[in-house]
Each structure stands twice: as C-alpha cells, then as structure tokens.
Image (cartoon, rainbow, N blue to C red):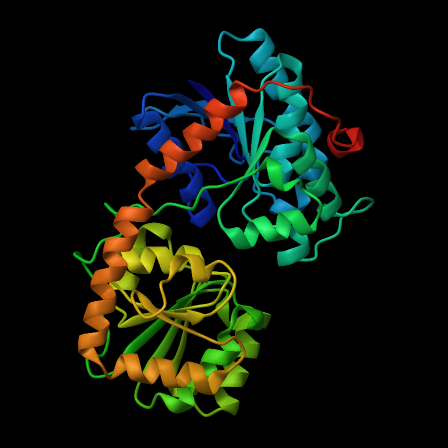
Length: 397
C-alpha cells in the first residue's frame, strides 16, 4: 500500500516525542511492506527535497512558508500552500498515495484539501486536542472548531486512548468514526540494559518527564517529597538547559520547592535529546507520571522502571495498578508521598513491578503491533471511499 504521512512540524528526521512517533510508525509500516512517504514542512533551506531513511521511508520536505522553524501554533496560515504543493505532487508526479494519514490538526487541514483532488481517504491522528490541552484560540474560528470539522470530514480518526476518544466525542466527532490504536514504544532502543546517567547511589531517584507547567502534577510531587525523606526528584522537560534559569515555569517550580523545603532534592534538567532518554530512565528507581504523560510511562516501562502516577485519563490504560506500578488519586500529595515512599523502600516490589512493566511494554506496545493495527484502519477506509465534506475552506485558504 502507498501511504502518505502528513506531518507538517514533526519530521522523522527531527528530535522529540512527536517526531519519534511519526518516525517509528512510518518505519514499522515500511517493514510490513508498505511504500511510505512522509511530507513535512521544510525548515532548513539546505536540506534535500527528498531524504531516504535507512528503513526505506522517503521524507519529502515541502516548501510552505519560510524555510525556518515556526512554532506549531503559528503554522495555520501556511497550510494552504502546503496543501497546494501536496496536490500538485500527487496529481502531476509519478507517485500518488492510496491513503493519507495526517498527524496533528493543521496537517489534517492540508491533507483533506489535497486528498480531495485525487479521491483518496484520509486518516487523522490529533495526538492532543486544543480545548483539552491548551485552550488555544486562533484569529477567527477556534482551534477546537477546526478540530471538530476535521474529525467529521476525514474517513477515520485514530485515537491513542479511550480518554482521547471521550475528548473527541465531547467536541462533536462521531464515535462511529473513531478507532483506538495505542502509541508504541521502541523496545530495541528503550531497554533495561545499557548506559545510565550517573547519580548518587545512596539517594533514591524519582524521575518525571514533561512540560514545566504546574498542572502536569509537579506541584503535587514537590509537596509529596516531604513524605519521602532522602529521595530526589529529577524533572526532564521545558527549554534547553541554557534557557532554564529564565523560564517562567521553572521559576514557579523552584519557588514551590523552596516553600516546601525540598529544594535540595529537586532538580530541573531541561530538555534532553530523545536519543539520550533511555540512559535517564535507567538512572531512576521509579517514574512519576500524571494522566497526561502516558508516553513517558511507556518508555520507562520498556526500560524496566516501575511507574507511580495519578489515576484517571490515559495513564490508567497504560499502567496496571498493583502490577506494573501504583496509581493514586489526583491532587493528593499525601497519598502520592505514601505511594512513592513505599515503593522507594521496597526493592522486591520495585523488581516485581519492573519485570511486569517490561513485559507489558514489549508485548502490548511494540511498533510492529501498532503498525499492523493502523494498517487495518487503512485497509478499512480504502475499501469505504466516500464523499468528503468541506472543512471550512477558509482554514487552508
């Protein structure tokens, strides 16, 4: 099958969780015998128009706007040009896809417009929703308005969790148009064996990964550290280490750590290249994750690291409470501290959880399995061609 991945800001050649997802899925689909091309927006004037990866995936760098990095929330004005170039490539070139799979909402707007020209189905992955994650608004229609229209226009929406399904239904996407395929994890890269970041062997390490905003649960874990004497919390995320001192989110979290007298056991690392993350997971005794951070929980599990997280949301589908980790009530620092202390002090329980977590990550979340499930969605929509409704033509004008 000829598959066009549309990922305007997350190139498989880049670094980061979103880039890795597109890269790993594309590679796994190619290994199953598909012809995969990923269309992304050119951010570097010196990069080749087409780059062939070692796995046989063609990455096509599309000229749409200036050849420089642009924040994802400012890409909407360039999606009309992106769609136009896609349409020209597919109608005038010697290669056209059987199905287009768009990642992120702006990619979806371009994909629907271009796919309509050659009559192919579109599959959409949002990864996160504006109204749930950012409340982001554009000049004119809201982001959630575009997402609602897009969810009704495409042939199928692939959600990663049941929690995402509920969010999509809440904004008006028909449940019948939704399929659930979990995210995958690369169990060849994320393994228990390999180098680990140096640490104090006498101080238990609790790792956490995510954006430096209090709502991610860092406020809870900072307070919880009062009940876990001797342990340290290491947080990876936010801007680069050089920019970290001036970051507003980092300043708020440092102030909280001072307030609760755990500043000497609270460490902010800043952003870390995705390729270096396995070594950080291996350095930890356990991972603290909130309901928004199921991706880091999966990677930690694949490295044989148990997870303590907040119950609710997607994390309840990833972590099996009492088997691969412990789930506690949200916004309850005392309960969180108790769960962290119990696991930090119980090596046998940590080993048992780690073994089960590793097995679950390898068996249920391999990219080969994920690619096969996504491939089944492609097969279903290519057999169910239908007329695609308009998605507010102003969106990609």
